[in-house]
Length: 354
Ligand code: PRE
Image (cartoon, rainbow, N blue to C red; front, top):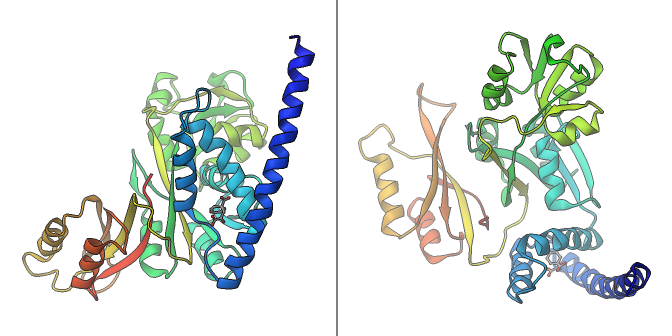
């Protein structure tokens, strides 16, 4: 068979795929109508997981789980947009790592709103302008994002999904010779994450300017010939700034966890995570935290994260706790935990554990 014959065969298969997708979308539209009538959530991560798991279990020889996920995440994004056009707020600017995380989950079809701060992104869901907000919550090198934890404590919105994204920084500049660079823009934590690269290339003594986001950094570096930026390769391309070095982070396992915030409750998918805030009464007395941790153990709940945050009220150096546990709020042991602390635990959402 020659190339032309192969291509004709592919064209025929593509026609069939498109016809089938059209049929799938007709059903999706009907589901959407029903959901709108019953006022139930459009985004159902547990159902999407069920579909991916089922397809993966068929044991395709050429399509592994990542390939199936990549294809279906776009199909799901198109489906959700057909049911109800999605509006997603994110911590910008355009090309930020958060923007990339948002696109990886919501695809190319929906409407995105960039915000300068995490607070503004969350507010735009609270006031109904967006249906979801995507914001960073922690990085495996730098720990928790305090602003996000504090907002979760205050808002009535819930975490409905999490996204883990590898973070690979590059060094971008219009200068061809790095010896002639006079200023480097980036985000403070990105400078720290690339300290080895900066030393190895004798860039330690160059003036550093910290800005809000790595995308903003490369935008500024792109406008000024003697400047460079530490940023994502996607942002460097977006702002037309040549990449001189790629993967310059100290640890190639650099990852950020992002969360999706919205105003509905997920159903359990059997592999869930629940986030909560513990604001304990009598926390100036011995054993206040012990009592909670004992109950978590007593109920056979696996705790996966425990972080303290300033209470911003009452005594100086007073703390509350952000906690992740395995399980869904409707699981017997998790709901029992909340029953034991009716006024001290705030439920922040139960969602598919990645
Ligand atoms: C569908 C779309 C969006 C949801 O997030 C989950 C699944 C899909 O495309 O399969 C359909 C649907 O809306 C549903 O099953 O609830």
